[in-house]
Length: 150
Image (tube, rainbow, N blue to C red):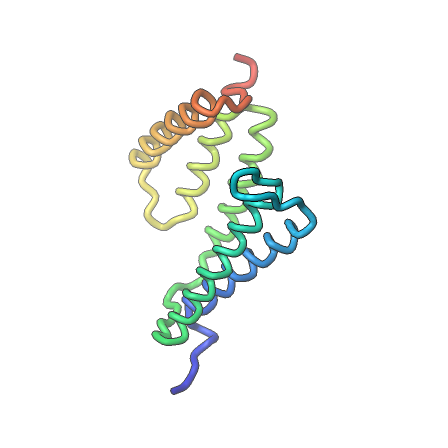
């Protein structure tokens, strides 16, 4: 049996989960853990990191057993637009408000794909903004200004 690592998508996905989980656990190692009933600040990142590591091991082993190859190519448009939309979201949250920042994030993310349809993206933007405002601002009471100046 020959191990295929370079183009094995589940192997690399599992490795990514392991690295992220281990990083979360490493960062949270200095925080007080607490118990299940009295959680400390390190409880959630430590437990979530451990779950990510376990899930990553499962995905990695599954990838080694099945060896499904990566079939996608690099998308320069996605490599540029996705980080830019995240950057603009962070900037616009402070200077324009929650609703414009979400609109730019959703449009930028959708434009990075090959199947961009304006009507679908507009409908998705409206639905996601309404849901996000209802959940984060009204439901959880987070102090996000909806639109700066209004």
